[in-house]
Length: 91
Image (cartoon, one colour):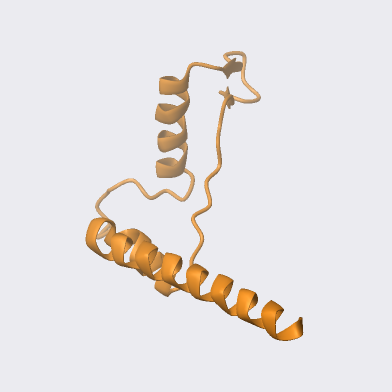
């Protein structure tokens, strides 16, 4: 009985290993980013913004709900938050 359970367990492990090998090969062929992330054991994390406060603490303050405008304002925020917009640094 125990030997039968060990055989079943090994079979399941082998099937799972084969499945992961196939997935890795597919990622290698079709998606190098996924392959690299897998090798480095990185997980993709994303923040989903469905609303954003525009002009906080000003009379123009409003809550933006339009997806395209949210993307635009988010990009603008991250360009300006660390003063990272391109400018001449020689002065």
